[in-house]
Length: 145
Image 1 (tube, rainbow, N blue to C red):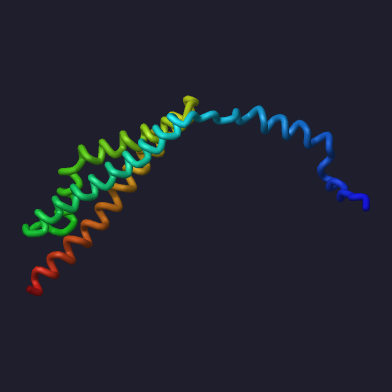
Image 2: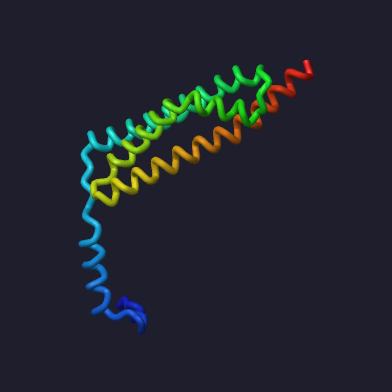
């Protein structure tokens, strides 16, 4: 039995497919990663995540200390975040290194920096939201004892 193929769409001709395929092939060079490069990226990935965990632990420890005081929960959260600013900077740098290891172009490096800034801002704001509520809950528990 002879196989037949469906005709090409009237909007796509064989002549228009070839340049598109060639353009796509030329536009994105093949990524050649050695096993050591893959290992470095994996190490950097787990490294920045470990730094994020250290930051969250730092702010929670500081919030625990502040929860015993008289400041508002927002003030306690702000104080904890301020006290752990250096650890947040370490996380930022580790995340940027992780992304930069995967990017080679100047545009990629700029994108890595912007993404690291965004993740840092998001992490700080998530910590602020969490800590504010955490302090409220801890104070409530303490008042019930």
